[in-house]
Image (tube, rainbow, N blue to C red; front, top):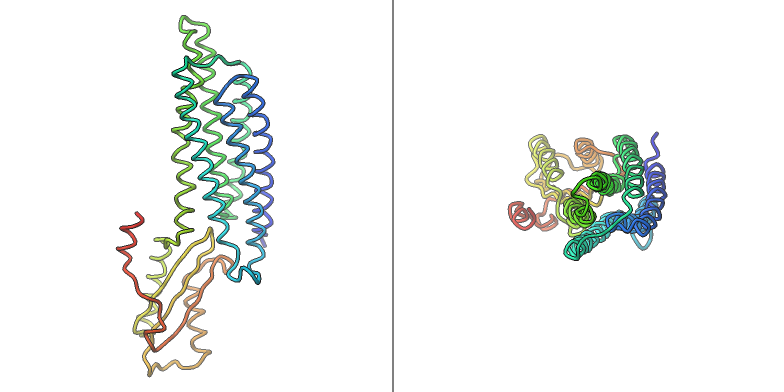
Length: 316
């Protein structure tokens, strides 16, 4: 049987180690070559190492499931870490964009193109192979932390690939009459990379922020509605209210079912059997569900109903 938490933690440790190497290399090479774009790569990597260490700690906490102080588990820490990652990445993007514009207006930068090309080529290839390797493993693992961690590596590959192509262009310009314009390559690359990184940072930030705010995942909500619609017909329930919330891979599901006072199924065993049938119909690993199903003949014990259309107006 696949040890999901153990494999998840090993992948995150590997990611942190490789990111640490990139952070040190990028910072040193950025200073040596005089390239703000490479320095941005190093700074992003240092933030990445901190976030990855937090991810590893979160993964270990989630593995404990519950404690006296956190009686519903630790899974709420997962989107919190991802919000921090998205926020830090967004701040770096804004800083890099302003820095690139400043350098461009100041007349550009003279850099050591040869070293910059060697750095960018090595890490573009290394990071690409690592992303493919992790993506293949995560098809079976289905870890939210690993998925978003791999997205941060995708950002880094875009950084390094753009640096590589741009500095090859700068190197080519040095042999032409356009050589004086090579000094503008680095700030232009910095501006383009910043704009390119913006959507990815938002892809990490926005879904995680929605989880912290408790926005119901629409696809999973619809799945519960379909399952319960079938059980309403099969068992002649009067009504039901379902509530769904997601924290990473873990789904919190509460279903309150209203039954008639003269309902034929009256024993605890009968209700447990129906609970098991609903659980099986919803599907998914037991470790990734917190499912509560209650039966009542009194409407006041049901959760307050809601209008999904109103939520969609608030969170598109």
